Image 1 (tube, rainbow, N blue to C red):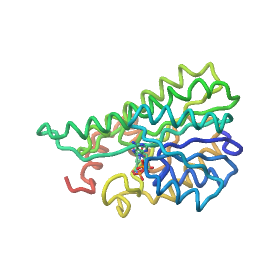
Image 2: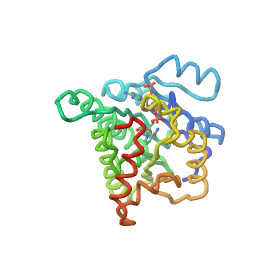
Image 3: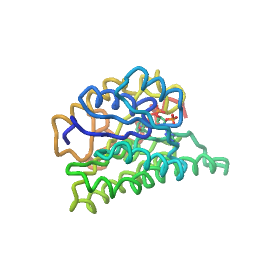
Image 4: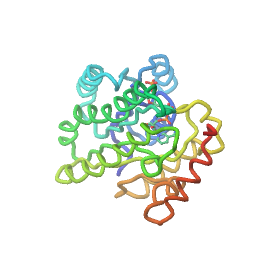
Length: 253
Ligand SMILES: NC(=O)c1ccc[n+]([C@@H]2O[C@H](COP(=O)([O-])OP(=O)(O)OC[C@H]3O[C@@H](n4cnc5c(N)ncnc54)[C@H](OP(=O)(O)O)[C@@H]3O)[C@@H](O)[C@H]2O)c1
């Protein structure tokens, strides 16, 4: 994928991976629109980087997605790339029904959010000559972390959605890419920003941009660190991957 001269919308870029990629895409000459719920972070980002545009959006709310999409398409009719970054991750114990509210919240944000975003932008993107939808799954789509059942399932859903959407949109100008991060030091889970188990954010974002720059036909964006989780089944060491992943669980569960 060409990553200069594009107009890119990243809902879920007020922090973490989304922000790190937004800054790198901006530095490479793209028009970047960052989205999220936290207005104070949007204000801080746009003040520090006057070329970056901030749009408040809650991707768990259909009306908010529709309003943000209308605003963005009116202001940026040259939008070529949507990165469905917004996501949440919750630790759950399914021995009792207490997990239900957390599970529903994650399905709404991590699955319905991207689906609703794609619905808002897919027709527009097909009018652009070289467009892309970049979804965000996880290494946990391919091997389960015991303490996050719903999260793992939402990311597996995003993986299969991405695979299928790529087939459907093969007859259009819209490419479908899937970003599959390993554990990265962000605020996704409490304590993760300092976790030795997770990859430094800047190293991850640099490697992602390098992949995009050097592998123009990539469909699954995989840094080296995610391949342990991603290819356990293919290698035939899936049970060992699952065992190692859960022994290393930073929450000690
Ligand atoms: N870090 C990892 O280890 C890892 C691994 C695999 C996959 N991922 C995925 O990477 C993506 C980014 O996560 P991160 O690690 O960078 O965590 P993060 O720092 O917590 O970032 C999450 C981003 O999503 C936004 N967001 C969450 N709910 C939202 C909502 N309802 N509406 C709009 N924006 C929302 C947040 O913005 P506001 O709070 O301002 O709304 C924030 O910008 C997620 O999809 C996550 O599942 C992360």
